[in-house]
Length: 390
Image (cartoon, rainbow, N blue to C red; front, side):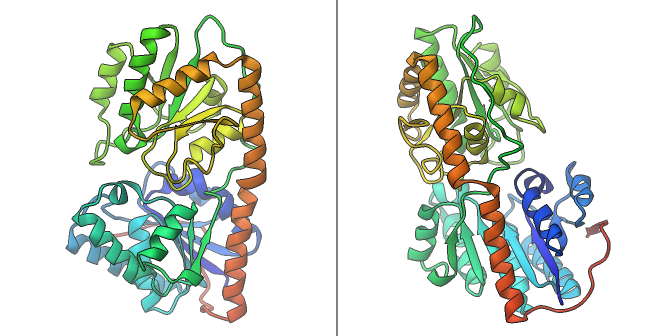
């Protein structure tokens, strides 16, 4: 019986940070996993999970037709050789070009639209192009998972997918053992501490966070504001390291760089903030809620799924630093006991709605259906290794 599954995403770190639980679960259930992604410092860690890792070069932010055609050929060549039971795609280019190749070869496809990002936030020619590509590449998919109902409805209403193939996942899920409750410390002499955990991108609301910090500091000079996450200078939506350093010199924020383990930083924060313009379901907020931290985030698709206003945090208006600052000061004025109760309710929400096992079971069910249909081939997958597709 064919037990091979190919998973592709635009960065190895994405699989390691958000999908390693799924990979390990699939392996435990007897599936042979190949992960295809660009090479980065997390690639070796994927091989250590017990899966086969194959490097595939892709221009994540580029729009060159020749580069994208070459990427399509790469997917076709690998999938034709492996002939997996299923192809699992994440992020735009693996979802589009990997799916087109898989469909052409008669390989079942399960897509995951984890968030629509800048392309759908800013309505441009690129937005129209991406919609056409999605419509063409997803039309024959066996299952298309979304991380919130807003995104699902957008795709269905725009005719980008077949309604019967769509389903909603609770984000990428959260490992409740790894992100366990952490006692909320009483605010000490250091002052109240807000923490934003994200890639340093404008559409994550980084600039609004800093503008709100400037407002709050006028009334509460002891309050601290921290940024944690990588700077991706190649991304056209990136906030530059130079700008972040200037904010530090102006004593508005502290930049903590990036980390492989956010838990100590969440533990040392009093409230987690994400003023994003749109999300799938932000993993950073699930991690914060699992560790019983109150949250402030925007009332937009993806974010509002994690926070119930005035229950486990506050919702604010998107792209509105004044409203964000107001919610921040409201959070500071709460008693320690009120914030503690918010954190406990947040943990309960994650346990009930966002457990990683819910995501894993949905994938297992979708894959078992494919097995039942008897689709796929019987070519054996090689032992764990790392290869490069040129």
